[in-house]
Length: 367
Ligand SMILES: C[S@@+](CC[C@H](N)C(=O)[O-])C[C@H]1O[C@@H](n2cnc3c(N)ncnc32)[C@H](O)[C@@H]1O
Image (cartoon, rainbow, N blue to C red; front, top):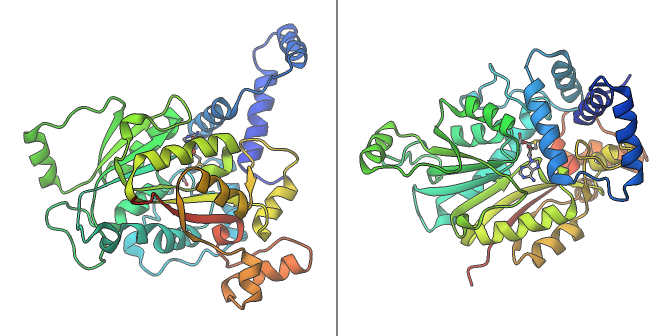
């Protein structure tokens, strides 16, 4: 049976495009011209923009294809409810909940993203962090983050040792995704859409402080890079499930812009698709060719080379799932056994991101 995935959504989109338009002569002419053009590639940015706009426009939690994706994800990983339900809003599925099980994403948020907000990382600061997310999508990750960090700027909650966010700038190239993000974040933050973002007056700022909510600026990008106006603006940056859809050159541009946009000493968490891991290999083997709906695969050496060339330092990187296993790390056992057996498939209770991705925390050196 054909699986439902972002790739199959992309295939349906291509199929619909080639049969719509009504004029078969015109379709034939375009196809003929296309084959006569040496470089007919629409480019990574335009293709991503089109795919994710259509995806977000078509997405409804009750759509059969979304539900099938959700079931497939659930059957390939753990659906255990996370221990602390205060942190989850399981009643309303957000766009993207079909891409991984809740537990896998919660673990990544807890173990990889939240440590970047520890007050120790920010010289004891308790509040006022400025954060940037590249490719916010439907705010699946941002909504988890905003539920977990302290909410108010003044009376910061002491118990979890994290610094409060003042502003999260959420970048995306898809206006339709940003509409979904706006809906998802409306109860968690003061959400503004732009650019430009209006200056906040002193009176409005005081009222905002009373509201004890962070601001989220939803920034629609019109090219695959971060504007220079964000130079040295961010304490923390992150991007989850976005770089797997970018090609190597777009990835490198972003890395150099991440360096420019971080404050000296600032940290950034990123995920890449890992060709060398069992879960990554399994996805690669299913793909017939590269497409933005599929993944652009990397290995650790490629990631560390690009990160170094961009002037960033790796401060943390996950081990390959099967290597961790040979040293006896139990969380990766099942994937490693499958890899050893040459099947490169795994199912049941393991973290989909640790099995499939390169997770890395990078730092802009302080100089
Ligand atoms: C698979 S979704 C992930 C969304 C979100 N990070 C999450 O994990 O739920 C990929 C997102 O990256 C965005 N994207 C694709 N190419 C991009 C680019 N060059 N710059 C910024 N965002 C991009 C897409 O529009 C989409 O919202």
